[in-house]
Image (tube, rainbow, N blue to C red; front, side, top):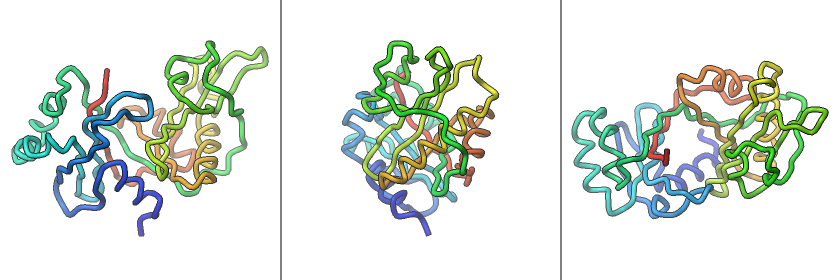
Length: 220
């Protein structure tokens, strides 16, 4: 049975879940509202067990359903323009979630995201981020939480090149996942299928690959 938090997250985030076999294009007003970083996400899809729910603005549903009657490759190629953002990119990711994070030791501290020494991607977050520093106080690795809605919080992790190979990312992801679960949400994690390092981090932290995928239209 699907975890209730994950079910509520997918219903809220996409506008519908679950669906039958095949591709289902649904309209959601959320596609016209700023996401966690203040930018739009005009198309989001989640695919599981032969079923895909593609969430788009309500006014775009009929046109995209017409595209969906053709080959999938043509739909994906046309999707950015079909949602009014022809210069944006289409991202295709492995979609993971976790209910039982790995019992890895905690390694980071929760701090405000405003430190100018943090990388730009980490300073996008509007709440505390989880960070590891070296003995001199320099930034080594960090996790931010994308709070898509009250039910589903996505983790993003990054490690400086000099600090890779120490297991920091997996420990940070597991630590952040425990916090998300304590807050009553389900932690999710997405990454490019070709990013093997990110896949190893996810597996080690307790986020198995269940064969789920997601794709969407994002700013470059």
